Length: 206
Image (cartoon, rainbow, N blue to C red; front, top):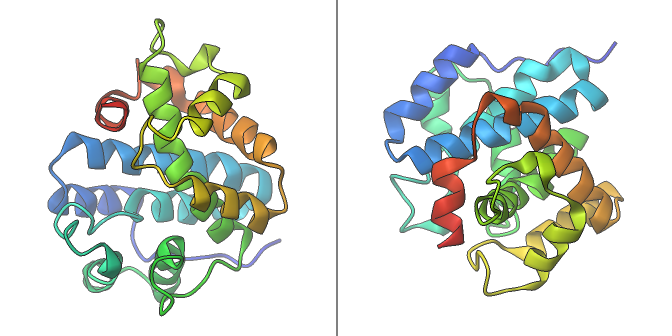
């Protein structure tokens, strides 16, 4: 059995914290989407710690809305907010690894959980943007072939960093197509709870 990882807060407390510092539906939905993806992978790789993985995903961009004019300090503002809410150092550490590519002073991804967050966080945005352009507006009929077309088109969802996605796949030792397929499957696993990926998708696709 894996060692238990403690977030220091419940999912409800984490969601309340997210909504305290984020009011744009885009940012809240993005947190929920990444949470769902992380929970999906936790059930495969670390089922004893699904709650921890989920809260990492939910809060990974906690400070972005309030400090998006200082991208180099992303997650640095989040750290004391999480700590004041009872979050553990392990929670802060895991969250900060996903932007280590932009700030070398932050810890780099080492665990499978951290590598998956790094690889999938940007990718979920690209998938959501691609899905909302489809006639069905549903991820349930979305596939790797369609995603690859959007990935190669740098004008589409131009804010999505393709290099981060590639590097994340390399960290995990996965082929890019494998990362695509797994992340689509992860998002499909909780898509029935929603009609679309709504605000997040429309924001990135525009």
